[in-house]
Image (cartoon, rainbow, N blue to C red; front, side, top):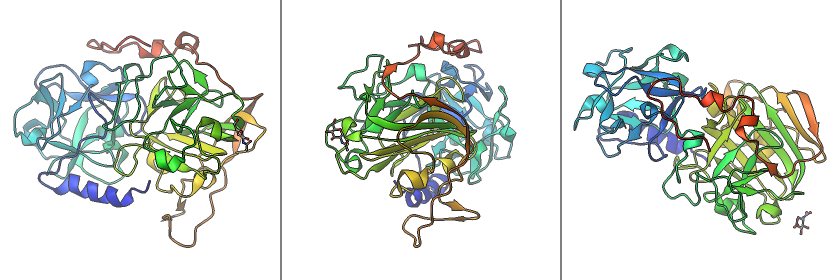
Length: 421
Ligand SMILES: *[C@@H]1O[C@H](CO)[C@@H](O)[C@H](O)[C@H]1NC(C)=O
């Protein structure tokens, strides 16, 4: 859905109005992950006044679970009674953040979460910033002047895949903690994108639906059982193409998607992580995958589906919002994600990044402006491995999955992650 207009309004409001308070679209205790999305999390070094705040590998420990208190006080809480805090209220760039006991009306503890996933220190022109963009464990988090498009100031909100909430957003149709029992009546809204044989897409819960009418309620349909979602009936696909680039994973293809409840003749609709109001389409939709790091949450993703074509891209890295831009919601799969869509082929490939949708050299085209430019050419792919077909099979158990379990071992003392599902 188009969001650039609202985006500007929200951003200005969050950064400049005295009483502006905007909390993330997600509920509960949240991980705060640096914009590069490389499995790092904002972490309090201990539960004491003055404890430093750094990034560490995400484990889901209590020291990484931040709660936005809401209201006008703008508190970002941890350990129940501590708050993210600017020492001495210093406005000097480079001031390292700490945690401190939460106190009422404390301007040093007042933050606003912006529509572009920045964390602004209210009324200061300063944002929470990853020092020097250094991704090493232990690098401190500081305040620095807010600058647009600065990936070091992006803090995505998310959840450990082994600690999903029942629901992640207000007004959600289905659930995120989906269990392991796939069923035809599941309303699971946690999707995976791993390969041509192992992915999900968003489709309607009820038969004969136009995707544009149910985009807020779409649910996950997957090629693997064992993740608590619905499974895509065998024979649905006529072609599936998966590519992995340095910055995204993408699956594209053809099929008869009336079998996943899309109305015959529906020319489709777009689904993404942000929607028009900052909640996703579907509301509460979460996307995970193992390509870049085991069980990594994708915070930027875009997808289209019609009665006979689909595409789904999930992005990481400094240009995630550009490569997964979802303002071109009327332009369909091929224009947004130029790739192989051929029927009769099922394959996994490596590929280069496509040029970002809508960006032509130094100019950016906006939907509705005439003339409409052509799609970019599909980037070249390599190392393609053909598959006979794509049909439903069990999801891999983690112990078979090359060190998956090992990577979740807590790396610092207070880590108490929940048991693996
Ligand atoms: C799609 O599948 C449905 C249900 O299996 C079938 O009735 C319909 O003819 C198929 N449509 C096409 C275009 O093959």
